[in-house]
Image 1 (cartoon, rainbow, N blue to C red):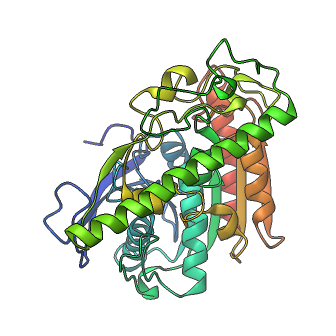
Image 2 (image 1 turned 45 degrees about the horizontal axis):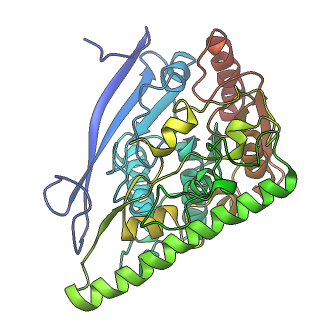
Length: 391
């Protein structure tokens, strides 16, 4: 019997890629010490062999049932969604370890499953992961540590390069996205609900109301970056203190409030697109701003530096895309309520060669929902099929 979410004429094979690594401490629940298990779903047409595999990974996974996965299989492609070790929980996520996981999944697909060619497909937060990973793989230098200064060695042989790169409904990085969404009105992290009125987008007493002036947006953006850097400074000081007093593996968890207060969600003239004003892919931004599912809500010191720090995190699509040499496709959605058109443009412009294509699906949301979602999905799959067909 087929697993749920399997298109007619296709098979969905669930399996686990297991690898071992030496670790000074555990940052995931379970796993058996130094054993890392990656939950994978291979979705492919039963009677259509292929030597090419489309590989998806998102830092926190969970996309094996996104419409794009069975949709591509239905169109004749072999598709792998590989979850990282941090499936569903990013509070202690280290991006360098996610890159290592992606490398292991690709190597397994080539060595065990026998695929000759791999096309990386990064959806949403997977876009920046994929571009950064490909730049690491092409450089051939491996990984030699984390932004926190912890040793973490991954040999270049465990980071096989892909033959093509697709960034789909993607943003430029987790750290840049968080910074653009941070509530700039929080000036003291120890008193997160005492907020500066003139920067509080959700305070009716704020004299700055939509439509926002260019000067206000510039001031707000600078305050967002300053807040990210204040948190980073505290993280570095705290990590240094803990290492000195409690040992090299000491860690601390903390909470970051106010992480969904981007002016563009309230003012459609900021990064204009077809998106619905006053809304995000997670719902009402005012509610999400202090709700439990906001970006970076729960963190550790090391994860902040590797995943969210504006100046220290490395998983950057703009920097990575500038270094890749393989053919690249960027697809953006003009009504995306998560990854807006300015991110799509920055991704495309960052690719440092001419073998690249940009396509925008008019009216499409982040997950291809709504009455025209199926048509939007079909359009995107057509563009992807054309691209993959020439790899």
